[in-house]
Length: 300
Image (cartoon, rainbow, N blue to C red; front, side, top):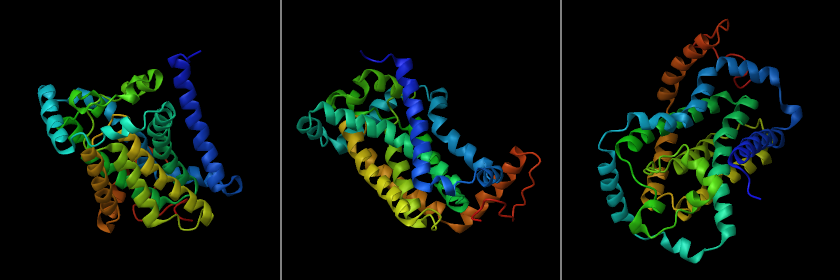
């Protein structure tokens, strides 16, 4: 018997919470978790944490600021993207027409991506790698600074809903998964691919900066390798499921590299951190935060 949508959504949320908690326990270890120090670190970096929570929700209010000529612009830009991408990805659906491939692809696209999005800042906070959390936060911020204007002013239709693509919208015709995705996705936020840019940025930031040995070395490597495999899996799924064009994927990779380089710039990092420390101090009344002080839980 198929699950009702409310039950399905509840199970999805519960599975995500359980997955994040289980991941922290496996990666960090119960004995290495200090709730007190983590909360202290949270106080001094509340602005960063709130930003990471709010950024993925931007698309929920995006529709309110779209231009009146969106439909004509969407047709124009989609035709342009199609002209340079063509039918390059139709072969994926033609050669891999198996339900198990569809199911696994949807799981990777929806569950694995969301898991990485929320698990990464949670584990960095848990091990109190605050400098790395800040760099990751800055990189995510620049991702959305670029993505949002493109999504508003350069709308591009998902491949599965573009008639000339010849693709089946596999993600969207699956009842519960499709309903959940379309409840937050207007189906024209294609260029660049946010899925690709965000998960690739995560891989580049963690692999270039490292976790400085707080997590046992092999566990650190396991998570980086997991993200690397996820990049490959998500790249395949966004094309196979009828979501993105090859041009979207390529632009997503370019954006990830740019965001990672910007987040690693010392001047940019210090300028943003100064403002975020002041904001954190205002958010957490009673907690004094000196802009030049690292505070408890910062790489202690």
